[in-house]
Image (tube, rainbow, N blue to C red; front, side, top):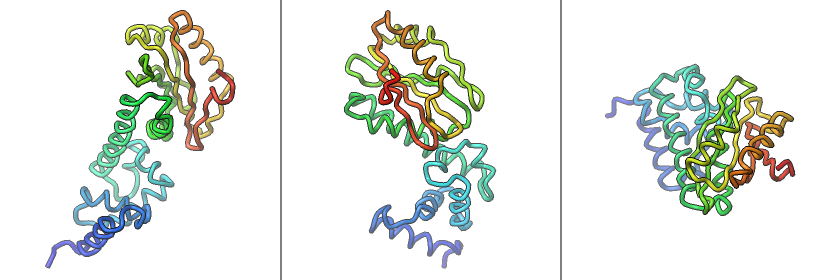
Length: 225
């Protein structure tokens, strides 16, 4: 007889996953399955449901800031770190795809990467993806980390780094913590300043993607680049 009163439920959930795959599980059950490795004796279901209630969906749970996750009832540091590690693995996996395939052939990977990396950030970040001549990712670097609605950006620093990497193109990324990905006048202005700074170096600005919880906006698609 097992010492864990939840063992029978755990075994049944694992079996359903192995036999029928993730489609057979509700979101809270899939999250439960993930928590089994760090919630050893307690019932993981209430924790999974509390996380989803707080952060709306699985992407929100995994992308939420560490301290916010720890505030959920039943969640300690071990659970929070476990979830953030899973999120980091997902981000790194999408980043690997961008390093091995040309950006133009893996645009869906790029959008997934942007969403995973930035959609749930509570501070505004401005990042630059540097691309080689084959349009493969060289580096993803942070150039501005600000308050909830402002991240200072310095075009000369971006130009200097593009020279160091011998980049042929860049993609600009930043998030709107408000959730609304609409391009602001300030977004348009800084994009044009960066284009002017990179123009003499023959470094092309392919796009500026703005991400929020409500979606992702392409300034290129809107004719703003």
